[in-house]
Image (cartoon, rainbow, N blue to C red; front, side, top):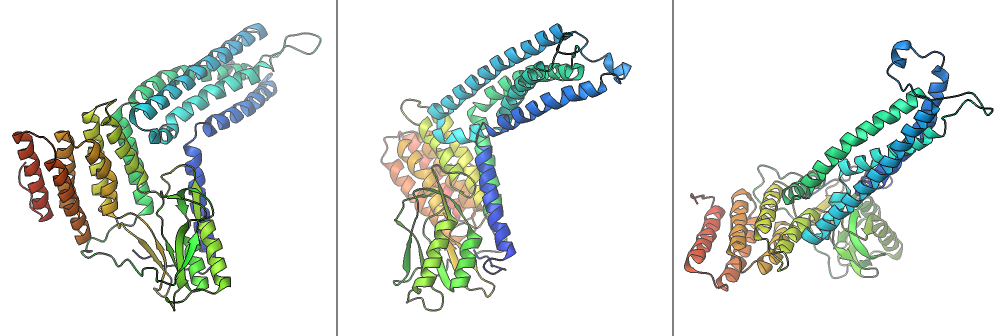
Length: 469
């Protein structure tokens, strides 16, 4: 797949693209944490706890009579008692909510996969529930300090509007608690988790991948391979490759009149001082760049490759499939032994892989305005994604005919929707490997006949023939 620069190094478009990618990464990081929304809620609540009593004071002598009938009508003692009860109960409910959330996270980690924790932590309903509870608590105790008795220190003051708002927030919190409990029960169901991961994968694919042309029937040209004289570029830091700034790489390659080959895909683990990329002159592939241009390219590559301690879905199209596959193999483990969940996970994997066939997979090629190849980015093709989805479930579920049957059915579904010859070959290779595994198992005649029938149906689908099951 090719993309054109459309701008030179340091152009406004390139800067905007780099800023957009950085903003996307920051937003994704914030969304996957529990604390930002509650923290913002507390800040807003404290500000409201200061501002609303001021509004009360300003309207004290000008309160419309109709409005006053619906506001809090008690004295200072009643106001303090109500606000104190709200604050005490809300901090207790918040503690309960945190406990239930942590229990859910622990269950997801132990029962399914630790890689689902990020998905749970990014749950907007949970974040907003915690934000409402903490905001109500902070608002109540902030308003409490403004309630005054009639003494030497000043006239009696009861912020009627502020206390009424606290009451309404408390009622909203009670309703939210009920909804939260129902939401939590729904979230820990495997079907809900699989659906959420699938939705996230589709979102990443739509953002990162380009649609496959409807009339495209041949494989893409994957561009030049690094020549023998290509210069090696090593990573500056260790971790998972979570983001690649494509525009920065393209602008640098154009300026240096070079070709940059990124050898590791987003989601791969990289190590400091270990090769991660190559570069060579665009006009003289058998030579090396001069020291000045090579140093500039190395610095740009180091800045364009962002590493993190964990994989994220910002640009990683394989991360969601890794989550789904982990659910499958955890379900097949002896301690859990839940093949039904494994089959459900494979259903989701099949749907996602079929969705991916609508996009351009494999190495991404970036060209300049003159259609000269400048940057080649590693990205998994369908064969690599098939290996990700099949290898471990096929190994751990080899003795379960239901798992092998679902794997073969997945190949049949994929064989029907793919359009590229390389993808058909990848399916045929995976079919052959699955048949070898199935032949080594001690299945009875009926199970073996069913597996043979499914394998035949895969071959039929590769020829665009679909017989009734």
